[in-house]
Length: 142
Image (cartoon, one colour):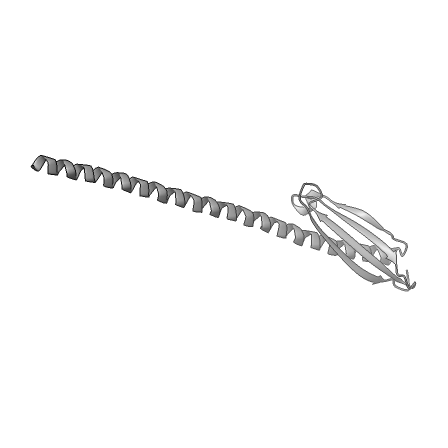
């Protein structure tokens, strides 16, 4: 009788070990799924952070376009705008395009409506675009 009792214990142990292995495999599967989700979330946040940086850079470039136009208008009241290509060497990696348009004020006078639209990076499937507008008054001397 001792033998049959011993066999029963061995069989119960094997079942326990098999059940334990199933539990471990399920836990590993769940942990892998959680880890994959965290990696995907980190990648999405990194991409969004890059887009935010592009938007900021495009905004700064649009502001620079407004300043550039104001400077040009100070020297030449007939300045009508330009497409300003900012090289990648000046921006540390990616180039940009800033389109500057200057329009006469509808009321006449010595004011000009300056619009600067910046696109960063200049090439690629994804870009950030920012636009700024400002009325610039021409000095009496120009």
